[in-house]
Amino acid sequence: MNFLNIKYKDTNMLTSNFKNIDSNQIATARQVYGVACHFANIAAKSPSERYGLTKVFNAVINKFYKDADSVMTHGDVSEFREWDCVPEQFNHMIKATKKPKASKKVAAKPKAAKKATAKPKASTKKPTLTNRVDAMEAKLDKIFEILSAK
Image (cartoon, rainbow, N blue to C red):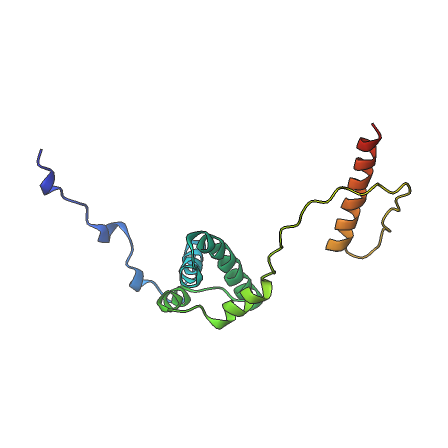
C-alpha cells in the first residue's frame, strides 16, 4: 500500500460554508464560547489564566446580552472574531467582578468556644452572604464545643 497517495474526502461537503450563514441567525452556545476563547487568548498571560478567563468571558458575554434583552447573532460572532482587543463593554464588566486575591493567613489556634452562643435572628428578608456565614460559624462553634468536650 502506498501511503503517499492518500486521498481525503472533500471537506466542503462535510461542513457548511461559514460565510454563507445569515448574519441575523442566532449564535449557538459553541459560537459564544468560541468568542469567549478568542477574548481570553487576547487577555491572558498564561495558559492557566486563559482557561479561567474563558469561563469568565463566557459568563460576561451571556450576561451582557441577557441584560440587553438581546441575543448574540452570527454577525456579532464574525465581527468579534476579527477584533485584536477585548471590547470595552466586556472589559468593564470583568473589572467590576474581579475581587482582590486573598493573602495567605497563618492558621491560629482556635479560641475557646463561648458557653452561650446566640442564635442568629431569623429575618423575613432574603438571607445575605454575611447572615449565612454567621449561621455557619455558629454551627461550627457548636461542633467544636462538642468535639473538645470529649
